[in-house]
Length: 468
Image 1 (tube, one colour):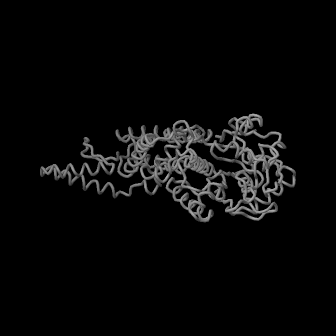
Image 2: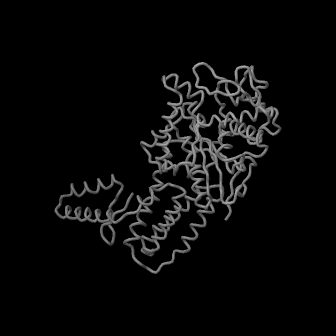
Image 3: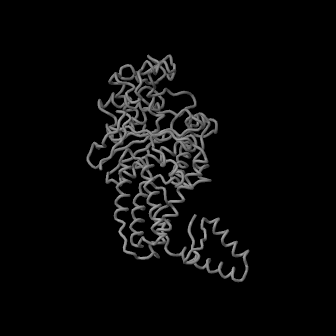
């Protein structure tokens, strides 16, 4: 079963073939750290975290790099307003980024380069671009890339230079040779942090940092370049021409972009002031629910944000959690009928990985978990499932969860028998209270358990409990 990826460069699904057998180099554009991350950032983080988890599960040796832009106009402006050093401000938000990422279950990338710590690589690359005639310095100490020297500019966004100019998405600057040219180095202005360079004191443009980081950490060419679809133009277009002007080869074989998180038909962004901070959302919904909400839609599709969607996600995810808890209990206390669930296990596993290998279709993969829950709930109810088979199914769910990360960690999900023992005591206590006609106390036990997510049910075998 081969892995296919929709490549935004070629606009089609392609079989994934790594540059080096068994190894994958992936770079994902990170955040500009002048504030806490919002839910739009969280979507990109969770999408590419899941992608890397799946690649590693398939056996690939993955090197995953995500950057921090810690030198930027917005950072400098906010730092000046707060009276702190820009790098001190960004360092504080990087710490908070990792706090939020941990709560979202996002595993750490292998490297997190920062613009401020990559100046040597950035300046060296700009020097090469200037030397080969693709960029020019200006009187104020800036350096601009000369876009019209590139024949295929716009190949990622499928745009022509003429349409880009008429769209009004170019900044006017009298120092540029052409309105389409963009800064790879910005000459220093009063009150800004700056670094020495052959063109004078200054700081890097936004686009050049990623090109330099990729080249210095991963080499001239990588397997996968990822980010949000809002980065396709101009950021990723400019990355491509910067790098390829120096290496004379492709920057990345596969370009992947997650769809935008939208609020009332507009993308969620800080500039539009329509964003929701991750840490605020996590006060109401746990990280697993947030992951489920994002992964239940294909990564490339736009997704509308709303708290009601998270409520629905929490309710749906609870069904999977309940099924897991019941399978866990059943695997210890269930009967031992002669059953054969090989077809269920093999069929579910095949369809799960078929979905994941089809351009990381997490929503189709999760549907297999719901189908499995429906089947196993029925089998446990009529006691046609053996406890040994329940254990095998649990092991398979654990395997899937290492990729999706939508259930608590395995050790947290499995019940060592303590819960069963405590519930038996509470059920007997409630039975005794009812026998003594102390109904208020008996009802209080039921109500408290309901608040804790546990319901009591009368069955032919007596009172039983289950999570709700």
